[in-house]
Length: 197
Figure 1 (spheres, rainbow, N blue to C red):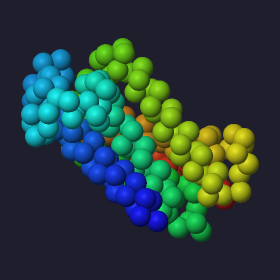
Figure 2: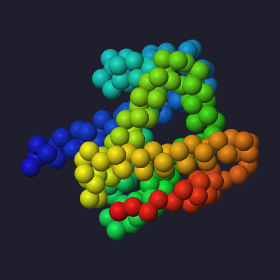
Figure 3: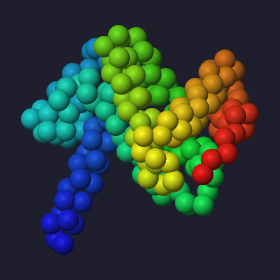
């Protein structure tokens, strides 16, 4: 029993340090630019040694893309915590609040997204992580419902929900961020409401 608790504590501590390193690094990327920011600068700003940094991330690139791992963990945990009798489409809308909150910090979020999209290598890794996020959520949908593990429906529903998120983001950017992202997401998801178990 103690081993389970210790392992849980270790994992929580690891997640906290990874989250803090990611936030420190993002601040430095916004301030100095991605290319100009070094691992040594990130480690120093976080109060860690270079060696300790590499216990949590293999590289600066992994750290930048690592935010999508954190997003995946948070969204999967959030979906698991939603009431089982809540319609799936509503549960997906609620877990997207995590993304809405992230993008509300527009300077940091936009700078990081621009950095990722401007680098073919980073963007390829982003697309891989984004696909993995959707697969993890689809797997969680299967665990929470009566879908067979090999059913295409959970992946299709999750993909449709993410298409609504993308459409809402595009409308938000087109409005020069004058419209409310959460409201745009509500509208997008309402236009494609899926009734499912």
